[in-house]
Amino acid sequence: MSNLNRKQFVTLSASALCTLGLAGCGGNKADDKKEGSGDGAKGSVYFLNFKPEADKEWQDLAKKYTEETKVPVKVVTAASDTYAQTFQSEINKEASAAPTLFQTNGPSGLIGVKDYCIDLKDAKILGELTNDALKLEQDGVVYGVDYVEEDFGIIYNKKLLEKAGYKGEDIKDFASLKKIVEDIQARKDELGVKGAFTSAGLDSSSDWRFTTHLPNLPLYY
Image 1 (cartoon, one colour):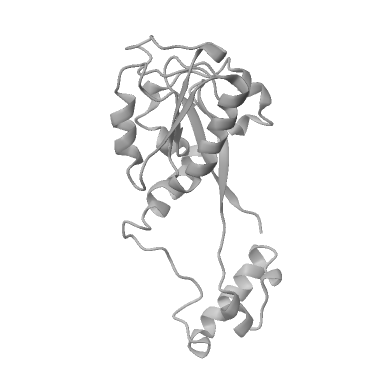
Image 2: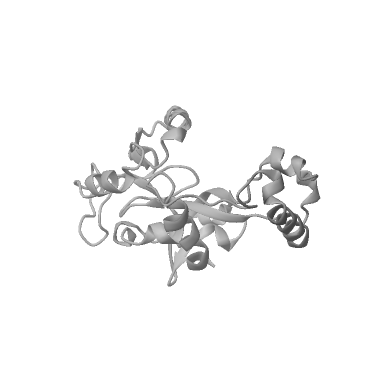
C-alpha cells in the first residue's frame, strides 16, 4: 500500500546564508535586524532542533561540520512539547544570538514564522533537490527545504490479522484492505474486538495527529 508523506522542513532565519549543509549565522526578523550575517567559514551556526529523539545525531553532525569547515555550530534542542515556546524566546533575541536554522512542521507549521525566514529562491541548496515538491514554497517565496519525511500509513495488529485468517501481505491495495476490514468488522464479536479500526485519542499526547498531521495534507497539496 502506498503511504502519504508528512514533510518537515528546515528554514533559515533572517540574514543567514544557505549552502549545501549548514552555513551562515544568526538573524531575526528580516525587516528588523540585519546584523550577524555570515559568509562561509567566517560565520557561525545556531540550529534550534525540534526533535529531542534526534538530538545526539544533530550534535554529532554539528561536531563533524565544525571539524571540516571550522565554522562553530551550536545545536539547541527544545524539550518535548515546548518547541513553540522555545522558538519564540530564542528568535526574538538579538540577531547575533538568535537561531540561524530552525525547523517547521510543513505548511501548517509555517504559520506565524514567515516573518523570521529569508527567501531561499537563490540558495545553492535548491540545486541539490530532486524535485520541486521538496521546497516549502508559498506565493513564490521559498521558506524552507524538506529534510525528513514521515509517512502516513496504517499500523495493523498482526495477531488479530492472523486470528482472522489473513497476513499483512494480503493487503495490496484499497480493495483488499476494504475486504479484510469489512470481514473483521462483521466478525468482531467472534474475534474479541470492538471493531476493525481504532483511533488516536484527543488527549494531549495524541491530538497532534489531528491538529498537525491531518491539516498538512490539504494545505500542502
